[in-house]
Length: 275
Image (cartoon, rainbow, N blue to C red; front, side, top):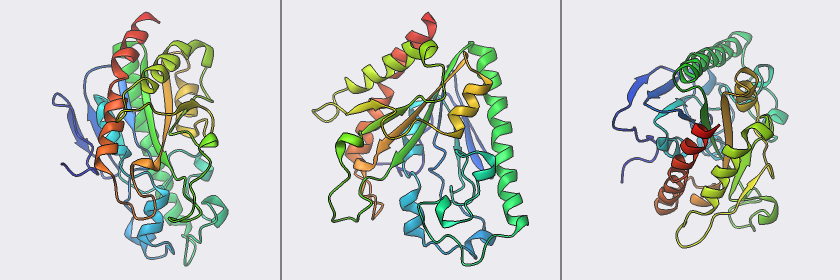
């Protein structure tokens, strides 16, 4: 099995490697991103960071870049959210205090103003690249759909403690909080119907909307710039496909999740064509 950390590319896609992200360009109105899959950290930040590798990885979204392989186009950041969080407003994108990041003691010494400025330069560059990419999708296809892929922890009390209550923690949370929900209802409803109907290792996935997350800066930015041409589905997978404490993945479950996500594509294309 290939390295799960490298998202597979479509055969007809072109891949461009930027120091801060990987961009894959293919055909069709579907784009995926995995904003928190990156683990890279600038050396200057690594020297002052208090968090160890395992703690950082636990709060990142490993393997979501692999799931992004279902879309013909993708933009996949390489940097850790602990360097710059592309899914938060710009003034909150660099974590500086424990309360910015689940109470974690982040820094041995706070990052300098120059360090913060460099991280924000990455933020600005990403959103400039995103606009170029989405403008092109809009020009070519009229409307487009973005999979904003994330994962979340559900065993925060420890590896041997009971998991969080499933009633409030769906296996798949679809965030739609910033979109014109009435306009995009056909796309959202078809996606959720097809994902929930997939035969996931002999059962059905628990797919619900806006239970734990509604989506943050990335979908809000897209929906503000492309309100009736761009639909972002903020998709959070509960980390049942891996051990969130050790970081070890269960390949069979991860591959099944990717297959479930891929199975929604024909319905999305069909629905977009009818809008």
